[in-house]
Length: 195
Ligand SMILES: Cc1cc2nc3c(=O)[nH]c(=O)nc-3n(C[C@H](O)[C@H](O)[C@H](O)COP(=O)(O)O)c2cc1C
Image (cartoon, rainbow, N blue to C red; front, side, top):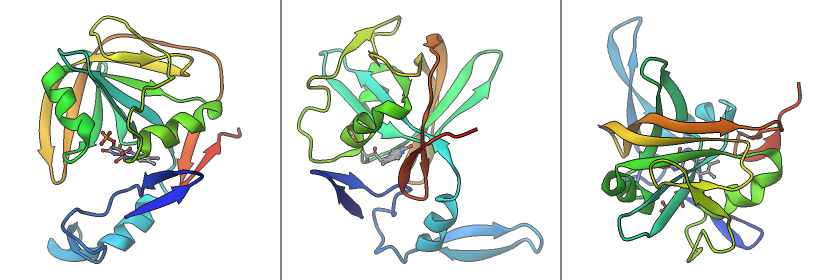
């Protein structure tokens, strides 16, 4: 499923399983009874849409120097010792195999002023997502985008298949953050954080 905002086409997020019409059944365990029930994926997406997240660009650079990146909200801290984070990346995304090949990725946490980057890196019809986007290498060689609110530069510590996504666990090699306000995502729309 995709939707168009301005002149870029965005993939809907959370995603509809590739095999489904949007009404495919997804297994969910009912803990109280131990029974397994089926949840409609549209309902699954509707519920998850209520989970407010930050917005990042997860990016990688292959040995040949090709840059890949996608907008990602399924990002989380995992461990303090060692410093581990995770990013869940759809197996069909171009960036998916690039991360595995590079063995490294960056997580670029976007500021409220960077919605345009979020839309650009979520679009599937932009030929070169990095055109006109400033970036630099830090430790691993993964591209760190200019002016982001915060960034982490990671080597792949482990990767686990999880349905139509791979959970990439990254060991943090470098990172930094600046003052500013984050871009947030809630029920299919971008917004700003208001304390
Ligand atoms: C707000 C938002 C959050 C997203 N989060 C993720 C995510 O965590 N993981 C993922 O695989 N795709 C996510 N997507 C979808 C990808 O950004 C989209 O499929 C992208 O076009 C893939 O790019 P690529 O094929 O160039 O790697 C998200 C999209 C949006 C709009």
